[in-house]
Image 1 (cartoon, rainbow, N blue to C red):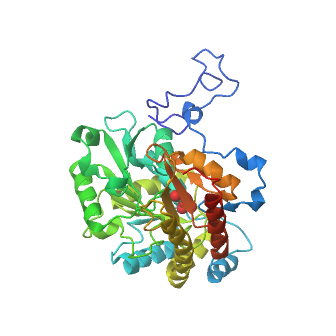
Image 2 (image 1 turned 60 degrees about the horizontal axis):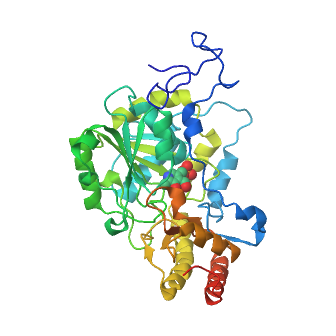
Image 3 (image 1 turned 135 degrees about the vertical axis):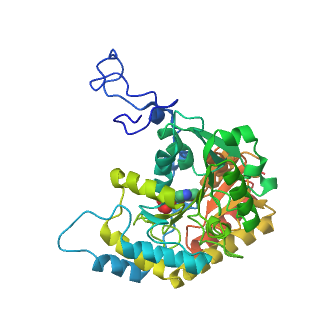
Amino acid sequence: MIDETGIPPGPTNPGIPPGPTNPGIPSGGPAVPTNPVLEELPSYFTQPLTDALDREALIDLSIGDPHEPTPPAVRRALIDAVTPSSSYPSAVGQPELREAIADWVGRRHGVEVDPDRHVLASAGSKEAIFHLPLAVIDATGSRPGVLWGQPGYPVYDRGTRFAGGVSDPVTLRPDQGWRLDLADLPAERLARTSIAWLNYPHNPTGATTDRAHLRRQLEVAREHRLLLASDECYQEIWFDEPAPSILEVCDGDLTGVIAIVSLSKRSGMTGYRSGAMIGDPTLIARLRRLRTTTGTASPSFVQAAAAAAWCDQDHVDERRAIFAAKRQVLLSFLTQQGFEVSGSEATFYLWVRAPGGDDAAYAEALMRAGLLVTPGRSFGVGGEGWLRLALVPTVEECHLAVQRWAAAIAEGRLPT
Ligand SMILES: Cc1ncc(COP(=O)(O)O)c(C=O)c1O
């Protein structure tokens, strides 16, 4: 049963709190009803010192939002698509956009998908990840669980909880390449699960995967009849070899699988909000029904710009070369200094063991030295003791960053 909060009742969503819309229950709580899930959310990690320091003077390696320009042809396509009068955008994605995405899947992954049956546009991958459980989880059923790897992107957890599901994180380990392996989990745990999230290339560790691992995940997911959801928003940011997609190991049968892709990282379009879901035709049909209600469609001019972006691969190669140059500067410094770098094969993140073992203390000391990085603990259990460096500053700023870091080490200003 769905109440007017839109969220099915469940263990974390016991229904509407007492108040004007629910006169049967005595009032007396807060003046405005609150969803308890919201109250329970941990706040994002904040760095208290930044207020005290001159933020402008810091080199920011903390936030994963690079500033490289959006390709001119994409900006042009957006401007050209602004019409004199305005109408509601397509909730499922304009046909030209879905066709452009299907063509890209064919070129990039060698997989044929039908733009109508297999592809649905989204306003970036974050909202797609957040909303997906609403179409999948039966909170009153026997499988409210959602598996995801920790350290990891927190939205798998949040989407689950707001949908009344039970978040079930799996701690990832460096000795397993930070890979979530469903084959390692007991059958009872898988039997309670309705969605398993994969995220390779992985935020925050930059770890990648291979087809054999993906194939194994698909086998386990199918055996236990759970949805395998693959967040592939970093898939075009690889360095040694192209990152594979879950779509590549399905042998043409996308049952039980959904890949979520995005233009944010691929095309420098974080502010446009455009991505897509590709996969199981039955699930896509359900999501089409759900998403005509959520009001999350990107504006039509963004959808036109998105179609232009998916059609072009040159700008993606150029962006990858820029990240590779930044990565080289930081990686050679870290290697020279004897830091332990783990994962870091793809994405625009480097994942580095914090000397001394305390990631928060090291990040704070680095901040005093003029560098902002993210302590691994802000990505959850398993991230303690690690630092995430985002390849966001320019190549020149990366050079400056390593100079500052080296000077702070030489002067004994950092934990060892
Ligand atoms: C793992 C992961 N998934 C999804 C997203 C959301 O990206 P977007 O909504 O811009 O596509 C991010 C953003 O940083 C991310 O790190």
